[in-house]
Length: 344
Image (cartoon, rainbow, N blue to C red; front, side, top):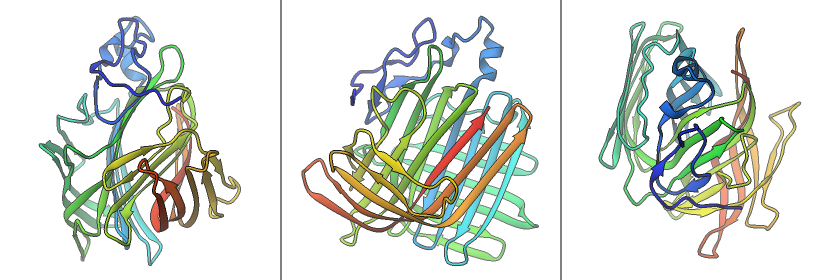
């Protein structure tokens, strides 16, 4: 079941198939999309690629996210801010044909993103052991401007999970997910100025590259926060995409050290996402209940592209057994769990 990739290599072979399948704790496989073998025509292959960099910052009071994505025939840049106490969200998205302005690096470990479209400036810079995010979005929401400058710490010793997941003969998902990066800086929305402190703000990154089937479904759950004793606690859980018989993306992080999990049982009511969700491992290694307090719904219907996402924000309670054998209790850890359906 949990097949760990240990050596550096290229992601795809000459026929465009994954050379290795499974997970690693560091970025090891070189993404080489020029080998994609869906068709003999590189331009058509480019149209089937899905690529994104999605950053998510969580504090006890609010959530902030910004992303740049290129889904082959369309580019999407978006940001959103959620005030937990007021249960209010501000959000905006810019779409550009054929990914105009959305040039993303081939690796999660080097390379920058500079997005400049329609008066909006977004930059993601990768520096040694840190990342810099800047956003300048005039008239972001109902005439309200958004700007932000954030520095994220990513020490070399920080564990993360990298997945090479087959989704069919020539389809694959290659992603790198990082939890618990301390954040410092500021966010300004209209007249509201927020100072971001690393002692209360942690950030995650979802870096994804791949060729997906036209119809897809997934669940994803994530959280980054602190235990009462000050140690960082993170979780990344998922199901529904591709062939997970080689490895799952399920894991917990305690002070930056990963505990790997196998499959989980997910239980939730798709008729009412605000009801509690249950996530548990059959071997007892993890048992969580997630109680949502806010629902973010995103729907896009653009002929060939149709997506529907229910991203639920709430609190996790439960426990997991760390790699050391210790039972780690989780109480009121703020995070999210989502259901995503797409034709894209």
